Amino acid sequence: MTKAQARQVPASQVPRHIAIVMDGNGRWAKARHRPRSFGHNAGRKAVREAIESCLREGIQALTLFAFSSENWQRPQAEVGALMSLFVRALDKEVDELHANGVRLRFVGDLDAFDEPLRQRMQAAMARTAGNDRLQVNIAVNYGGRWDIVQASRQAAEAVARGELRADEIDETRLNQWTSLAELPPLDLFIRTGGECRISNFLLWQVAYAELYFTDTLWPDFDQACLRRAIEDYARRERRYGRTGEQIAATS
Image 1 (cartoon, one colour):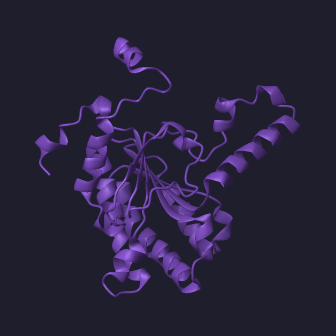
Image 2 (cartoon, rainbow, N blue to C red; image 1 turned 60 degrees about the vertical axis):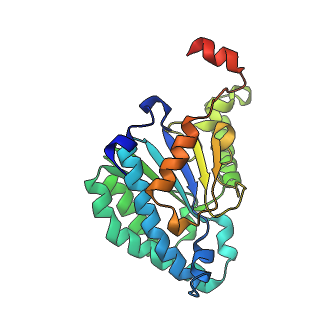
């Protein structure tokens, strides 16, 4: 992709925050008569492509759905392979992410992972904490309902401590306890692999996001694919409940 192509979308129409459900690794591997773990490992290249694209486009935040709270139900061998992949990826990628100004965060219930993996996650987050070129959030053992529940619990605890009244809890206050509270609102939600559902990902944050579904399996989702998604986003009119005429009058 040339620099001229990269300038086609005005900066004002580039999404600030993109989330991706990285679906299709298993089917990609099956089509090649390989184990599902082969597909998950191949998906690492697509992660790198997405991060490189976001850096070039000036996107502020990228949130990737790596492992849902429901994924523990998968075969034990596959879960074990995914955990090993996380460890290898952390060991190999953190230095480069740091060098490129990427801040890395893991969001979700991290207590379910073993101590060595949690320590690697914490070390990676600490190493990159001062970076501000792009924030990459890896959702692991994450569920959208869990996110809302844990935010609600923190709100209830604040009420119990006398820090606020129950009738003071509104969307803005509750949002401050969600996993991605400090980030720009989610603009573009992408799901690869041909499925057209949200699968309990960022339920709170997706409320006004633009949805983009593609048949491309995740290991094949390259920078050109992400560029097409951004261009599609740029063509949409985001009205937030208003009419098209009202949007035109204020633009």
